[in-house]
Length: 124
Length: 108
Picture 1 (cartoon, chains in turn purple, green):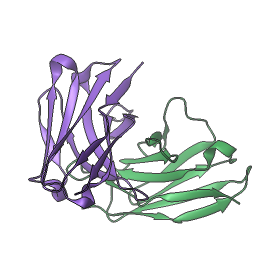
Picture 2 (picture 1 turned 30 degrees about the vertical axis):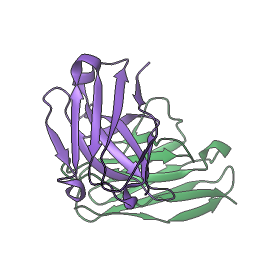
Picture 3 (picture 1 turned 60 degrees about the horizontal axis):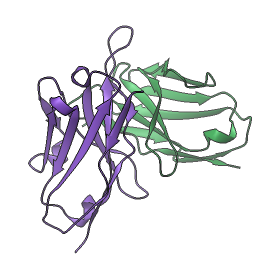
Picture 4 (picture 1 turned 180 degrees about the vertical axis):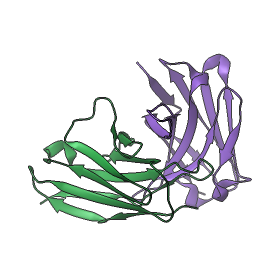
């Protein structure tokens, strides 16, 4: 079945970096974008950016420009999200999600498969 | 960035009720509007994409409508498993995808 399996929970100190992985299975990894979305405890969903696994092209939310890097290893169908200069406000659950633009008319872009999330805790 | 405003922020309803959640965009987004359901401790689940297309496997009691700036998610007859938080999301600009703040649907 189609799924995204994320790496395990991380605890980091302020100023450090974290790299979360997202392994895809059940579909052709290079055919769909991977997006990253985070959620602080009790808060809403916050989009961080997207990556095209085929080209490696990326687009990042302005808030994270300069601090986030999204990469991939197509040989193992895995996407990565690295966030640097961590601060306490980055404590959250980080989700990867597959994005599709397949619909009648072609005017769509939606996240149809999600990983279970990776908890990142930033604490001194 | 395109701002997405959901209303209400929270809602109490009973099993069997018809419920409508509204989402308004700060500028026209055509039909690039998706709806997600999230239960505590779980990842979001896609319900509706392109404003009105039902995702495969999602019960037909869920429906979406709208275009431009105003959108609605309707649940025709609430079931116990529908109590959750619902988010709209615009993807008109993939340079800056944004979510609404969420609507928490609670049991009355």
